[in-house]
Image (cartoon, rainbow, N blue to C red; front, side, top):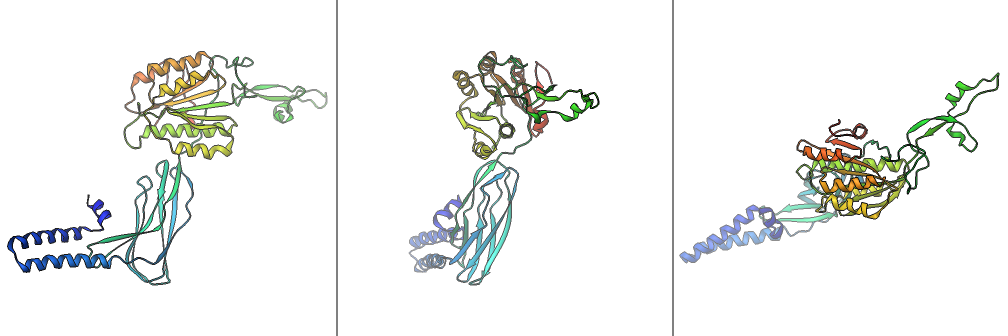
Length: 412
């Protein structure tokens, strides 16, 4: 409350004490009809007025903050340089650069004296601990009168927005279809990726094959130069199912750990960011959905990775449920995509809708966020759906965790 009063009136705690004293003296003077007490009251008011006048001076300074990166990674350390140049002598000023709690505490630089024409520099460091969009600044100067009764501030530089991307880790996600996995059979309605990314085997070279797919080391074992016989062997991958990936992030608070931010919710955003980067690197078309609707339009290729991470940096929890998000996917009727659902809780309605997707031949991966208070019934229900299930714990490396698929009830 004192800080709010100080911002609105400019009075410090000492100034408020003087105001209270003046009011008390005025009341006593009225009660006693004492001219002497009235003089003390007027003297306190005069001192307070003089303090206001002395603090009204405006600083004639030029401030500069070094250019900050527009986008940073979660956990990245940023170095900031401040430069202050006075066109007129400045004394007893505190220069501060405001920071949100997610980036650190405000940096305060006391300036005892800065002669005219000279420059003062200061360097500080902050760490982007949490993803999101934040403002660094404003850069302000604060000073008081000689009696420390009033305080005044002046903005020297405007705030600068900084986007903190979620952390991206090496991830693994093999796109398969539960019902039509083995080549050469494909789902009846699909736009398949020409070749998969998993090694299937070696076969003889036939006319029309890309010579770059020839495995020369294996071919050398079959060649007989003297007899003029041998086989050219070509590497063949498993047949792809689709080149479209839809990542569904459960943006409700159901099943997540408490706190702001929630650690399990931040882990789920990290999973979606890592899987999106993985599939973009493989040349897939990636879409990201939240419970309230689409978070990112379909993107393809590394050039759209920054835009996708920008969208994930702004994600917040909302009131919409996962059931609404899955229901929209079921309603559009598409089967030519791979769906990854990242959530901390699966109820009976969501489970029924996911099973409906599986019955249509859609490739579905269910990623469950697990912590010490996760309801065991949720994990049991997820395992009974029939889709591959991955359990992700806080702090676990995604590169290994996403390879560990639970395929049956009680499996680990």
